[in-house]
Amino acid sequence: MHQALLILGFGLVTAAILSLSAVAFTLEYAVTNVANLAHGEILTVGAYAALIVHARTGNAVAAALAAALAGGLIALAMHTAVVDRFIRRGTPTLVIFIATLGLSFVIQNVLSIIFGAANVAYTIPSGAPRQLGPFLWTTLDIEIIASALAITAGLYLIISHTKFGKALRAVSQNRDLARVSGINADIVASATWFLAGLVAGYAGFILAESVGTFNPSFGFTFFLITLTAAVAGGLGRAFSTMVGAVIVGIALEFFGGYVSAGYNLAFAFGILALVILIRPRGLFVNARRSIFE
Amino acid sequence: MTQYLVTVLTEGAIFGIMALGLNVIWGWSGDFDLAYYGYVALGAYMTLALTIGRHPAPERYILGLQLPYLVAIVLAVASAMLLALVIGLIALRHLRGIYFSIVTLGGVYVLYAMVGQFVPLFNGYQGLAGLINPMGDALGIDFNSYQYFFLGFAIGVLLLVYLFLSRVSSSRFGLALRSLREDERAAAAFGRDIYRLKLKAYLLGAGIGGLAGALFAAYLTAFNTSAWTPLETVVLYAAILVGGRGNIRGVVLGVLIVFVLIEESTRFLPDIPGHPNVVLQLRPIVIGAALILFLRFRPQGLLPERRYVDPIQPKTAQGPAT
Image 1: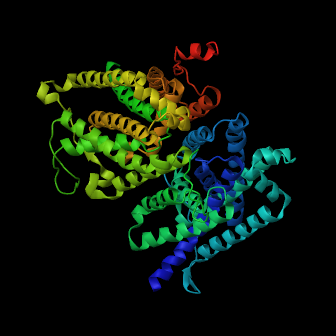
Image 2 (image 1 turned 90 degrees about the vertical axis):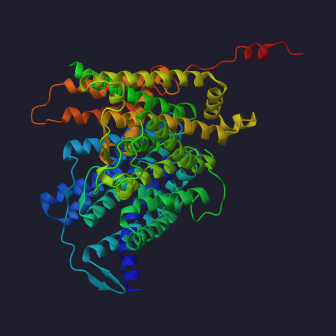
Image 3 (image 1 turned 60 degrees about the horizontal axis):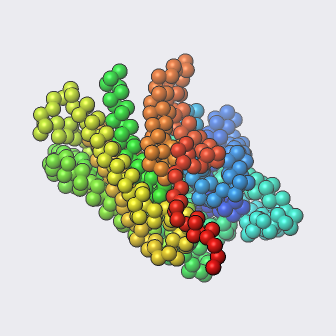
């Protein structure tokens, strides 16, 4: 029992990081209908930005802000320079999906020119493990979980209680209809990508902190797990995506703890394949339609 | 210089076979398959496991036979097709568009993790090595002229694949595949068994990928996880897209441009002082950018696929109404 609680504690840390990454991915999908294969690179860019700023200023808060800002800017650039140009021409979503794969390839290689392809260490003192309720967490773990909860609450307020949130939901349900109702869908989509980028950049920062090292393909590896969480929750649905992320995060740590951590990725994809085949619209949607697009 | 030219051409021929195989899946059948490089890799691993025999203790891998290279090629192709059957049976049944791609991406990452982590399979991250000059001894070819022989062999296989696919391209099967790509529902309404056709195309493409892998293994003499990543497929997609998706002549042209021009000619550009590898590292960026730009501005590629028009159809359509 004790070990199970210990693993659950780790699982909650993973779930916190994962839910931020996954909710950002799903927001990008919601307003543009594009599954962004370059989403992982937003996290990577955030991690490098945090590393640089941390080395300059020695301040973790400044590093976190830099990560978020860098993530937001790169996401906005992806949207304006690539995704939106395709959408304006009415390109099929699969084609845009392929373009984002090209984008991911380009960004990874640009990063490895600038920073080198090797792993860089990013260690900050994580504090001694402390007993908190039934869980054993370091100060860093607690900060990660608390900040993820705060960001989730913030997103909830933005999405369900502001005018922008209303517009976002309208665009995600039907872009054309939103447009004829007087919503500037292009600005809403850009702003949503920027917001998602802020969250994903920050997720990159806490992921780098908790892993301790990273390289240019770091975000892409994590993206594969992000995708699992987002699909499990239901693509384009922000809050069920977060629930999906919590389930996947905890399941991954239990698998890693009891079976083998080396096959984590394989296990994540086992979940993904099962979800897609059995409940393609997500775990929490009661529909058995197959995907035919 | 000759030495170098031989290397480029051999690699180019192998790369061409890979691209032709992927073109069956993406160009004709219309499925954006991200698992494709897994079939190439499996073909390469199987070829090695079937030909290099047993190595001493720290190395562990399955089979460890010493079959003739040609037999190993056939078995490598078969095992790639078997894996494609497993993935295809799952992924092609109901999934299309991005969901198909996501599942295939998952499939290839599972394979990648398995190959790396599960040591008894293909010796883990160390990989397999020791396939030196296959067929050389049997044919009595000496070490120095072997590379010319292998270049000829690779080009020969490329030609065979090309001729075979140009027949498939205009066959009923090839046309049926394109009809699925254009409009699946309409094709189903005309009595096409979509699942079967797509699965067949998937197996055909994966088999060609496995064949390319078998040649790649002989060319490299070794194969391990650092020799491939699933993202390698991006380069193949770029080649197909630049040349002309669906048109096998275009695919070969795309391989020439992306591989020979971008990958190889950049080798001769002068280095920027202080940054020794920048030109080398710029290649994937150029390839990725080409992929995006072509998707945006010329999605049909440089040599667009010929549209098949039924010569009788327009007359009937315009004929006098009775």
